[in-house]
Image (cartoon, rainbow, N blue to C red; front, side, top):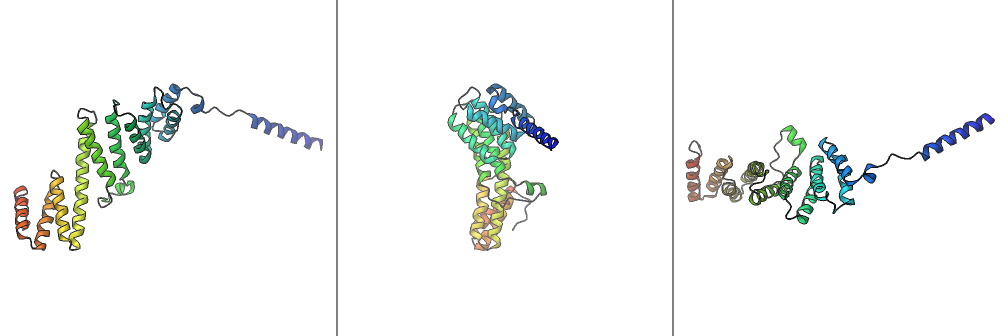
Length: 249
């Protein structure tokens, strides 16, 4: 019995010692802003985006007006984007633009907003399998085009301007494909005027797209179905002038 009591007493002391052992300090609550930021940058550079977000959020909430505040917000935008949290990335970007309308890195903010809006429309599974997703809603992609256009217009000398222009060309191709799919949908359902208007939209707004030829073909066929002979012949003439090898009649 005495041995059992002794064992219980030793166990109680052990548990007491474990419970009273101090926890490891949370660096987010004990480090200086500079130390915390350096750790955040290190983990961000190493691709540990969720941990970087934790540290940057701690800095942003604790020192919203400190000397590192703006850089913290810019890094937070990038971390959110890389972590796939585009909603928070866009919200942080909009906040940054609103609070810092004259910041020297405003072009970067618009660039990241364009990338984030593009990412919002991405479907990783379909991209991986090579499935065409041009028929999906493209509201965020259209917004991304506007973001890049704003960047190129307002910051023509920006280091991001060249890539923004390339992104705009890619987006134009995607949007033109989207319009063409809708035109085909209308053609198959006998909505020929609506189909012709979609083709016309491609010709007017995406004239540098390789899909202009198909858009003109849709217009020729749609006008023919509608009995609009003059419009059909005029469109056919434009088609033959720009694509002389085309066999549409």
